[in-house]
Amino acid sequence: MMISPSVNRTPILLDGINVYTSNHLDCEFTNLSVLYIDVVDFSEFEQVHGYGASNHVLEVLSDTLHELISESACPWTNVQALRIWDDGFTILLPQVVLSAEHIRNIHEFVHRTQDIVNARVSFVGYTSLRLRYGLSSALSIDEQRPGERLYQLITLAGRNARRGSGTKPLFLIEELERLIESKNISSYYQPIIHLETMTPFGWEGLSRGPMGSDLEHPRVLFDCAEQLGYLLDVERICRNQSIRQSKVGPGDKLFINLSPKILSEPTFRQGETLKVIEEVGLDPKQIVFEITEHHAIDDYPSFLKVVKHYRDQGYQIAIDDVGAGYSGLVTLMQVKPDFVKVDMELVRGIENDSTKQDIVRAINYISSGFAGKVIAEGIETPDELACIQQCGVHYGQGFLLGRPKSAVGEEI
Image (cartoon, rainbow, N blue to C red):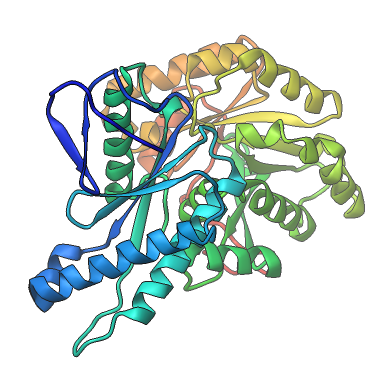
C-alpha cells in the first residue's frame, strides 16, 4: 500500500513516511480498517529499564510484526504495518466489516506477536510485556477527505486501545473458549414478587461464569463474549442451563435474559429453546424473554417481526432496564411488551425523589395502555417498597424481597 503526499500539511509520522491530511493520495481509504497495537504501561517499563532496553523491545516488536506479515502468518493479505507514536504500531487492513471471525483472528495474531516478543527479549530484570490493541473501521467515522479519514481511523483505534473499548486482555479469549467448551456456567434464580400477596409470581434466571475467574461477573462475561463474537454461544449455554436447572411451578414464569441481536440469529430461530423447554416439561407460555436493551435497536420493523415470531409460539416479552440507556418510551410504544421492568436507578431512593416517582407513575400509566405488567427492580428498603406500591406498581424484585439462589438454595 503506497502512500505519497502531494500537499504540504501537518504530517503524522508512520514508519518514516509522512502522511499529510490531503485528498491527493495514491490509496483508497473507503474500504479500510485499522488495528492499533501498543505496550501496556510502556512508560513505566521505560522508567524501570531505561531508554536502551525500551528501544530494543520496540525494535523487536517492529521486526516481529513485519516478519509475521511478510511470512503471511497474519490472517490477512495486502496489509502494511506502520510505526506511529512512541510504542504504537498500526496495521492497515483492507476491509471494513470486522466480523466475529476477523476479531478472533486479530486476538490470535496479537497474542502470537506478544509471545514471540517475550521469547526474543531477555535481559536482567526483564518483565514480560503485555500488548493491547484497538480497532476502528471506515464505517465508524464521518466522511472526510482520504488523509483526514486515515488520521481519524488511527486516532480512534489508538483511543480504543488505551481505554479498552472493543478489546479485552488477550488471556480472556482463552478463558472464554474454555468456559464455552466446558459449559461452566452457574445458574441462579431471583424471585419476582406480586406485591399485594407478597408471593412469587416468577423467577429471573441469572448466570455467572466460573467462581473466582475473570469472567465470573455477568457484565464482564457477556461484554467479553459480545466483543469476541461468542455472544450467541454464551447466551445459548446460559439459556439452556437456566431452563434445565429451574424449579418453577406450573403457574410460575421464568424470565430469561436475551440481547436484541440474539433474537434475530438464524440458529436461535430453529426451535432449540422449545426443545429444551419440552424436555423439562415446561410450557412456552411460562417463558418470558427479557430483552436487555443495552444497545439501540436500529431496525424496529425487522425487530418487531422477530418479536411477533416468538409471541406466536407462546412466549412472552419483557423489556429490561426501562428508564436507563436506550430503553425508553420508543421501545415501549413499538414493542408493547408483556412486562416492563423499571431500572433500579429509578427505584433507588425513590421515596425522597418526586421526579423519580413521577417517572415511575408515567411508565406505569403508559404500560397500562397495552396491558403491560410493571416490575420494579432493585428494591432494597421498606421505604422503597412502600413508595413503589404508592406509585401503583404491583410487582417487584430486589434483595428486600428475595436474593438470587441456585437450584440447590445457595445464594450469590
